[in-house]
Amino acid sequence: MNILVLGSGGREHALAWAIMQNPKCDRLICAPGNAGMAAIAECADIDILDGSAVSTFCEETAIDFVVIGPEAPLAAGVADRLRAAGILCFGPSAAAARLEASKAFTKEICDAVGAPTAAWAQFDTVEDARRYITKIGLPLVIKADGLAAGKGVVIPETLDIALDAVKSTFGNYGAAGQSVVIEEFMEGEEASFFVLVDGVTCLPIGTAQDHKRVGDGDTGPNTGGMGAYSPAPVLTDAIAQAALDQIIRPTMAEMARRGTPYQGVLYAGLMIKDGQARLVEYNARFGDPECQVLMMRLGAQALDLMLACAEGRLDQMAVNWADDHALTVVMAATGYPGSYRKGSIIRGTESCPEDSAHMVFHAGTTARGGALLATGGRVLNVTARGATLQEARDRAYGMVDQIDWPEGFCRRDIGWRAL
Ligand code: AMP
Ligand code: GLY
Image 1 (cartoon, helix red, strand yellow):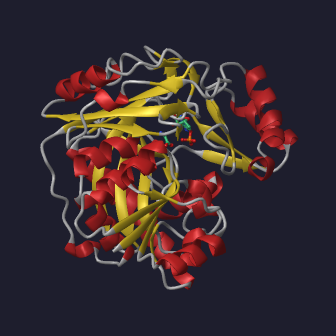
Image 2 (cartoon, helix red, strand yellow):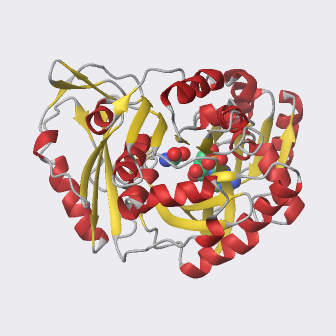
């Protein structure tokens, strides 16, 4: 079959890599793609936020299946548009993707089904939000009610910071800042749980933990993620089962009951304390870089699972688990997550092994005149698999050490919490 992957990050390179290994894939196109994807598939320059442009491209190119990587095309209704045109697609409708796009919507659904999550309140004016914060005091969490590219959350250290954060949250995120959600601060350890949902059946496909802070020892500003590993030992089978029974299945059933069934991968961010999980947030997509470790573990079966998800056949599927571990180290441009220089040359990736246990997934890269250039903040995701997490980690850092990129950096402690 002919398959189109939408996106240009490490997540989409990993999806493309897994899909390419499955003999069902005859032709793979990535849009817009990056240098890593260009090495294994064709790349097409289409506006992935424009549902009719994507749909027309699919008809002209005889695409049989579309896999949507990032959240923006989901929120823009690209999956709806494709399904209306009769094109098979992996990814939720815009209505179902509200589970990521609106914090208040998710909280309201959780309350409706009694799913454990932080207590919350929503405010439409700065004054009301400030009055509430002054009344309840710290600790608390302030969130813009919408997509804010992972930047709309403040965990204030003082009351003054909290009161200022309310004002900037309303001002900074455009439509996302029209209201704020104020939540109880939950203590515990965070982990991510990935579940395929076909509207009815929920099939877990793995757990992971990422490292959000830029510096070793979890220091410095937050980023999109500096590394990840799977499985997450804190998310034991018992806790995962309880999260499925108490949080994920009830919320998915409620989405279906409301006429907006969820179809795609559901990424549940969980806070775990004393053997109990509570929901931090839902995302309507794979995490990046969590997807890289999941794809390394799932390999070619990822395509069969995504197809079954899109076709409503998940009840017939089982994941073929290996007793393995995967770990990815993000290499980023110096300065990230602040400003960084684009265009530096990366050498040495060609000397890294590429097989079912080693892969350098590309994020912000461009190939020019035979050279590999860094053209983004997060640039390479050096990913490895092993019988133990330690083995996966040693393999990943072994590859990192072969890459010659003086303008880049990475954390040296990915996986520390689990090791
Ligand atoms: P979100 O965008 O909702 O995932 O929030 C980003 C990050 O903020 C999460 O990954 C958590 O680390 C933290 N966070 C969000 N909500 C809470 C909460 N209620 N309690 C503690 N930490 C939170
Ligand atoms: N790595 C976190 C995310 O994809 O949201």
